[in-house]
Image 1: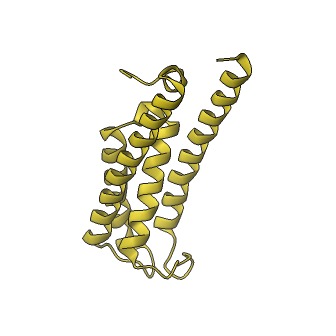
Image 2: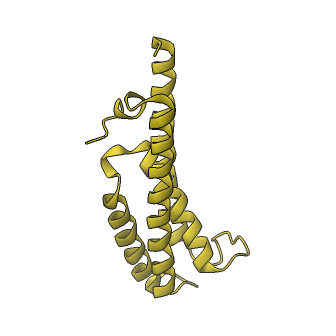
Image 3: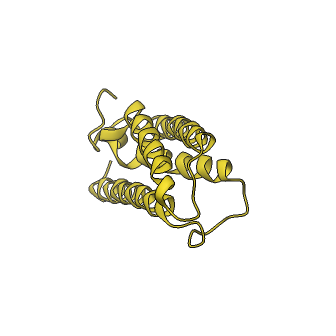
Length: 138
């Protein structure tokens, strides 16, 4: 691998890490906004939760190696449970166990998708292209 390729890959991994952090921040904000201020996609609440948490989990897999695998699922599931609980005190919002379940399921699917993408990248570019980001046990 040339020095330029390595530098470009490093930038891409860093950008994916920042995208994962931004995605987590968006979940925090959207989960704690009053209902009238929160944007709505027109999808069901469960589908919104599933897609948001799946996308976030996939970004975590790719950009935040220290949170990979089940750590991210546990983190996102616990965060979702806390946000659902907080919605007792947020105007026009209410907690729902089905939203928590959809969030957790999304996190699991996102983890699997992220791991699949990492596997493809390993086969395509070699394990060094993934390992240089600090992944344990690759």
